[in-house]
Length: 151
Image (cartoon, rainbow, N blue to C red):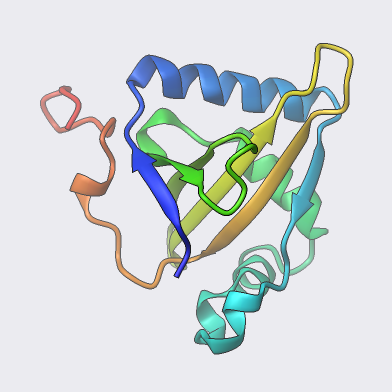
């Protein structure tokens, strides 16, 4: 089981994070994606990064497709922020959930490291796979309700 410490960031913090992510991606950030992970060895193949990316983007380079998809993330798709206890000196990871119509719910877990204004930014995509448990509205702290209020 993955060891993490979770917290919910404010809407303003998530918005700033998404702006940093988009800035990094638009300015040559290296995107690192774990196509195959050790935890996937005992998992139903449908819930692996490799399967999900091949299913959603069959005719595309995985890194190119992920770069595009990450740029589309919104504050309403934010779930939580987690500290990786295995690598405590690394930046926190953010978890998002995106629904791909006709395909299913996709769990996304990323870490963005902005090294400097002129350095090589990196975006590490740890998870981009179909969710094993269907998403529920309460999993998204900044999703708008029908009346316009955040949950």
